[in-house]
Every structure is written in C-alpha cells, then in structure tokens.
Length: 261
Image (tube, rainbow, N blue to C red; front, side, top):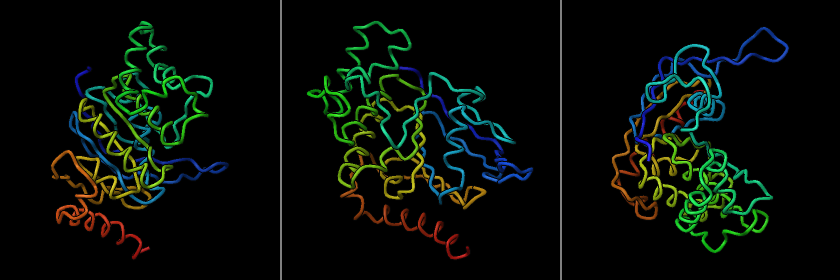
C-alpha cells in the first residue's frame, strides 16, 4: 500500500470563459485549505459553487486561473495514477464481467494476470459480489454496478480517492448501505479522500471534516471537524446530540445564503 499523501490548496480563484464572449464567469474565489494525509474531507454547498471544479483541480484535470493545488508535495498539473476518481455512475464496460471491470486498471498498468485476478476476487468478496464475478453489468442492479466501481477504485491502491456524488443515483436504502461499505473499506486503507456531496447526512456519516461553500463564486464559509467516533451508523447517529448540532450548523450556513438571495 502506498503511504498516504495530503492535499493543499493555496489561494485558488477560478474563472470560466463565456462562449462567444470576452466575459468570464467567476467560479471560485480565494479558496485555501489543507487536508492532511489519510483524512476524509467532504465538500458541500449549493449547485454551481465550484465544488466539482475544485475536485477536478485536485485530479489535475483543470488548472486554476490563480493559485496552486498540491497533491502531497507535487503540483496537481495533470492526472496521475495515484488518483482514483468515482463518479455518480459506475461507468463500467458492458462487454467485461464484474471481475474483468475490477481488473481493468491493473491490466492497463501491466500487473500480472494472477495478481489481477486475486485482487479482484478479494475486493468483490469484500463488497458482497463474490457470486457475481462472472456477471456482466447488464445483469447487475445499479447498486451492484456501483459496488463493482468501488472495488475497481480500491484495486488500484490509490493515494487519493476523489468522489463526485458517487451514491446520488441510488435509492435511500441502497445509498446508506454503500456509504457504510465505502467507509468500511476506506478505514482499512486510510487513503486521502475527498467527497463532493449535497447530502449533509452523508457528509457527516462519512467524513472526518466538512467544508461548506458559499454560492458562486465559491468561498469557504465553514470548516467543521466531525469529532464523532468510528465506525458510524446513521441509524444511531441521528439520535446523537453532536450529530444534530453539526447538521444544524451546516444547514444554517446554507440557509443563510438562500435567505439573502
């Protein structure tokens, strides 16, 4: 397992050019934050506040107009094999079985066949899909496909896991199961993780720390440490006064912007 590395964002301001115009749309404004190695960070805020743009900067897919983004000690100027990115959709290859989809990244890296097979088998068992290793995506439910994507992510043993609302397409019961499953696997690796979400309960359940953004252009409004013991169970947490206090604080930060809009 690669040693964990942290993330550092220094004075990031970003603009997108408006098509067919010399005008620019401000997206992020003077954002600075640091996630220590092995920390699970969640980013919440209204749509359009730059959360996904910031995630793409960490991935090296977008360069900030001003400021710098570091993964470990290196500038995030390009995609890197140490970064895994989970999307809202599983994005599996339909012609590959569940096992072969999990093996894909390792195959592209030239890992030996037996290593690929052993890694995929271990992770499919860990995600409860041992009996579906030879199944194709069309024969799997949306939740099962997302679990295959989860196994594929951790198969690469990344230093950084970036997630853009990876559970948003799931029903409430399946979503909760996947959140807990992801955290269970993450706790074994303690890789540095960043989650973009609109779900406040999800952020508190999964993250060590939640950063709340203002409407566009996104600025940091609150930076909250989630000092709740792990493992966490939402059914239990929702009766915990500390959980309710954190949820209320986050909700009020977001509500202020709606009231003043």
